Image (cartoon, rainbow, N blue to C red):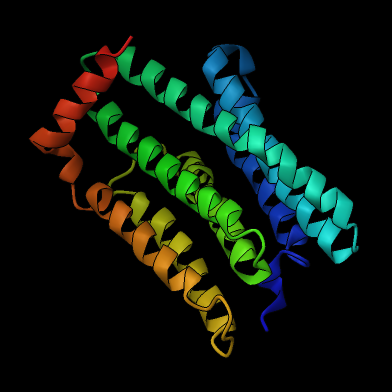
Length: 232
């Protein structure tokens, strides 16, 4: 069995990713916190807390601290909804405050925000639903973490090259999907829970396509963006 998928040894990967996130967000956010809105701070705080929760849960299982793992799991019942709420509030604030010059790109960013939020919600919901099955629960929890890959890598890309000549989501989504494929390969001889990651990869790719193929420029999404901006 690919034991890294049960979160018992993956705390090091989550910790490394958290460090990478701090590096990625330093130029645009952490180095100038006063320039950001309260919604941004709330989203950053909840996302950071969630990554720390994944680290604690993973370490607790490896250390056989079952009570700590369960306590962190119960804390996620509050934290995960807060992440969803802060994403929605931040997305609404950004699209509503967009100028005529930035509105078009903001509708694209809105899709990224809401699609990743949906993937997070589905992954987390299935993780809780299957919590009595270790192999399934752990894989869905890994999927929640994979929704954070794009927001981190895209900021590194803009740090390297602020004026892109191509859609950086081809890289960020590609890395996300590559991690999926690596994990699927590592568990290729498993029987229990082996269908979770391929199914979730298919769902991730399905929701990545509109951003990659320019479908967010279509009338349907633009109409939704106008409605979303008008709410409240």
